[in-house]
Length: 257
Image (cartoon, rainbow, N blue to C red; front, side, top):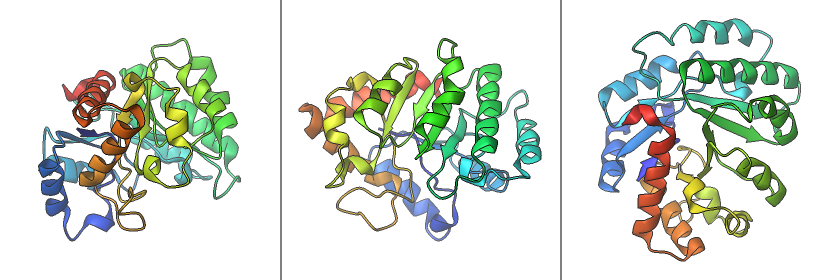
């Protein structure tokens, strides 16, 4: 299995990072993809990935909840890290988030568009975060629909109508995490309309721990619970879920091969 979205470099794992990595390996995980948060987290993320080369892979992006009046210069500074021989396998985590605050809606759109340009310029997939911001996100994304832009719609929790819109972006996978195991989630029903060839596994650790770990710190080894739920939803063997989602992830994140 591949965990396509895990923040194991954050302070929540400071005390047992190596143990968490070992448990991930024991659970059958072959690759861990780490999305960046903003200019303050890059060094910690790269340091974590350097400890486990060919197992942990970093992304470069500026998270929408970090966007404010002063983020334009910070984002421009981060672009300088995209030099020849850079280690990044994707541009992420980027997108829009209006759940907590709508103050910087326009700035979030500008930041997203800038980072889409990076993805196209460097031929990297885009890892998209979207929370309570579906329409404004697609205002930015829709002009790029017929370009080579590819990536993952991370942590999909939208409606059937929104899933239909996402599926129109043929070069994008849909990231499924612990939310699919939640009792009140409508995601299992929606997934009946989604081909398995469009899904990748993720945890979003330390957040969104799957049942039966809900409410606790999430970690990458718990991804097996997500895979087991998908096997139940699609009514196919667990091994088929593991194999297909791994192929899907490798198809998008080409720099890992």
